Length: 258
Image 1 (cartoon, rainbow, N blue to C red):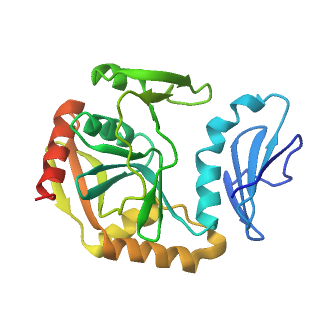
Image 2 (image 1 turned 135 degrees about the horizontal axis):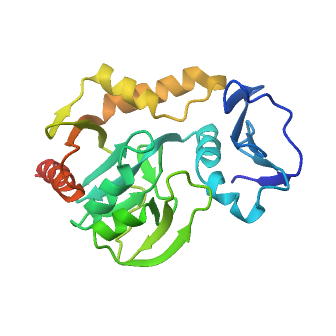
Image 3 (image 1 turned 30 degrees about the vertical axis):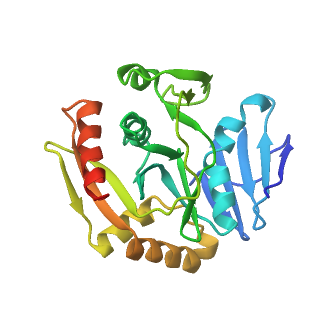
């Protein structure tokens, strides 16, 4: 349970050096001038906004990093990525913004995978939890994949001009056991290579919602994931189409189900 409140004055923190601060067991995040969040050590979220920020649009930022940190404080392992399942395998596509996670996941759905999670991969007790059935991506991606949509929510504050899309006929999975992590990287030739445990730790560490107030616990969670989940580099050819790269990834995922 996360309690959310809103206040019309600033949190009195200095964000000049970083947009994320860890102070007195609380996390502070400023997404843009006049809009900041405090995530308390009880996972409650306080929204600080100026009159220049439309309250009805605050959710666009709230459901990303603030919710991610609130869930992390609640004991979940939270990573930046999308997740799908195929038969008995659940794959998380993990990476920074702009690495094509959502587009790859969307393309895999056309090939029979089930949708689990978008933007946040939330894991606890060896289960991954579904938060919503909307996918954040670009109109170009939806058009190029020829995917039928049921609804669109335009994101006014998204720097990459994306929207949330409700996709038709998605078979949604929930509380699956994650056993594969893919980390997309750009290359001139497609390949999928299994990571060593220390390499996996570094990549998970970089994409994990870490709380500097609780470093030891987070490092233990990251170590558990890197030791128990098969992690792969997905080197995709940047010259190839989405379909070609997605089909290559799908074939590898299929090979793991046999």
